[in-house]
Length: 500
Image (cartoon, rainbow, N blue to C red; front, side, top):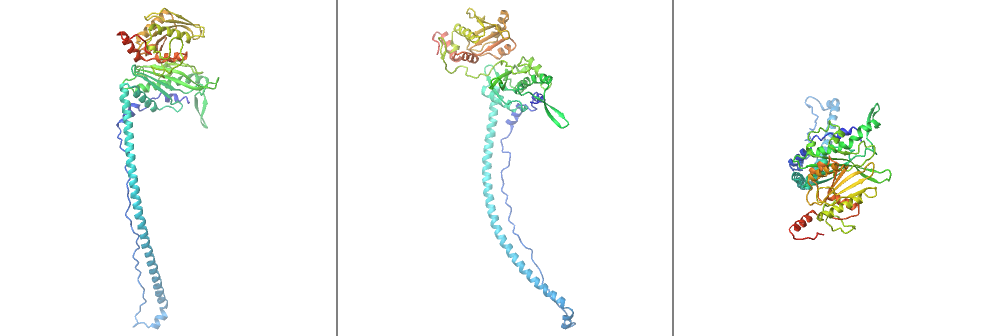
């Protein structure tokens, strides 16, 4: 990577995807070329000009000149006439022979011309048939492409997950970026909360640091950055890429489909201690569209802008430092996981969303005890209550990363409201804790994530909870629809057995 590419990264496309998309949808699907035409010219016979060579005669007035005198004085002229006539006769013979050859050539060439015409007409017909086939194929493919783009655009406006992902793929694929920026990404979208999550590959600027181009008398030469330049330019690269991606996505979201955008950046590199390839998140940004409305990418400082948006990054990037993404991709089904051996009284058929709230709180407490075990951490269990108090307190003695953590568990089947996040923040402050964890079986709204992004709290949704359980040896499932039906039937007195 060349440090001058940072400017290119922060330069928005001259033509946004929405305009390119409109041009695609407006184009006619007629084949761009005219069909083949057969144009065989008329055969023209080769003809010889008429040869008109007169016969010469030697004449004299016999009444005035005697024959004897003619022979004496004009013998040479008479001989020349005779020689001329002999040459004339030879020429006429040659002309006659040539005329016969021309006539024979015309006959042969006419046959060839007729064959050429037949072949040309046949090939023209074949080409015309193929042209018609290609025209139909082109028109069909063009219409399919237009229909796909139109469907994606309409579905994007309506907030349909598949269409949103498809259109975001097109937007990212159309961006003009330097070759050094990886063209790798994964996308997820929460239809209910209108949250878009994009995870992108970032260049490894630690193990393959950027260079600068120095102009010498012999021409441009690539040189490594000095220490001052490394500190100035390297921290700008990853924030610049995330800012550009977020800017372009919001810029092309005229329908305000994306309520909340999360862009996570990761780096893939070979760990020098093990030789194994590692994938580490080094930057994460959560933003709403109004936060980008007034940004001028080409004039801002990417680090300052990134920090003002509460983005998380690895700082100066002297080494690869992992950061925790503000929100990850949903990599598994929200309602079902593969079966594994489980502990205690629960089995893999247990639907966490249908558990008794006290049992669920106990499960979360046990989970965090297991998660923090082995570090000298102490987990204090509070009395069970169905209010918005403290479910557990974690005391981590680690001097660098430890502290006091507050844990709250919400066994919900509906989206957790932002008020629960506010309540947790208040409890964290009241308890003098360093951080709070809000764990639920369901999901959080975009406003909850936006609020939590500026607070010392971590939101763990259903899929993340299942992953954390699997990490610690549990394998359960979450089926929100099933849990809702069961709770409704229980409220009406129609059943009292947990679904399995």
